[in-house]
Amino acid sequence: MNPLAEKYLRKEALPTIFCPGCGHGSVLNATIRMIDKIGIEDFLFVSGIGCSSWLPVFIKADVIHSLHGRSIAVATGLKLARPEKKIVVFNGDGDCLAIGGNHLIHAARRNLDITVVTLNNYIYGMTGGQMSPGTPTGGKTKTSPYGNNEKPFDAVTLAIGAGATFVARETAASPVKITKTLTKAVAHNGFSFVEVMSQCPTQAGRNIFGKAAPSDLFNILKENAVSKKGAELTSSQFRTGVLHHDEKKTAFRTVNELLKTEA
Amino acid sequence: MWKIDKDQCKGCELCIAVCKNEALKPGKERNSKGYLVPEHISKICISCMMCDLICPDMAITVTREKEKCEKS
Image (cartoon, rainbow over all chains, first blue to last red):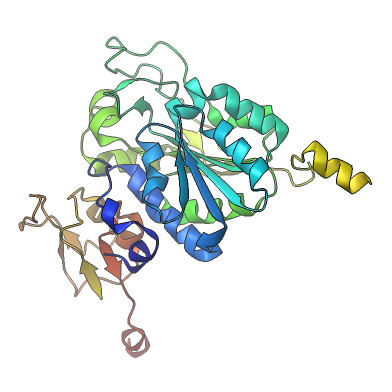
């Protein structure tokens, strides 16, 4: 096994629960490289329910595996109790954009100093392939057998509109970029939102894209990611990289902290 | 040096998709769980570490040998 994995992962919990070829595993790989750069002592991890929320469970750090969609609400409480810690939230597209959508926009509005990593795999993978807010238009799933006639959520635009101060998007096909972006996001003082587009060979691959091989889905992600600024996009493409970075806006402080600084 | 922990591998072949030099190919040997473990051709490998970075199960370890780099 990789020496970094031996250092930072719980051996008794391995192998991971992810299917063969799942992009979440690559994100876990990139995350432990980010932890190696900063130091594991400062981190607290929070996750919700879903495939993506199993990701921090394998890391040898304090982890809360919370309720479905309430991961950001739990992280808000944790930040108030332990303001010196770096809190990283892992959740999926169903967790963060559907049931926990309100928590996301309000944490972004407050500009709370936490990092939210949303792993968007276009589908509810764990429960059997239902349509999620991330499913592209026309995508056939178990609950939309004639094709999805709704538009998918653009999570990045939503976060910028709600007031997040560090917003980025990466794909699971570029692990080095994920490590770099996560390092920046954790260092940023304010609400950081990172959307990672990931492949799901078991559900999204077979139903939406019609391909079950992880390598084919990997190439689709690579083709759809556009990192060049100002380039025109087709309907299936999306922008990657750091899309919004505002250092001027002050991060959330409690009333007690404000009174202390005034007195 | 290229090493693989055969029992950790799930045979997803992402390492083969990501290899630019085609130093990895689909294997014929099965591990304890029945997955096909990829084969490595050490002559072509340039230790770019892409397979190490992408591996979802952290089964692959690539270590760069300093002496080999200095000689060539």
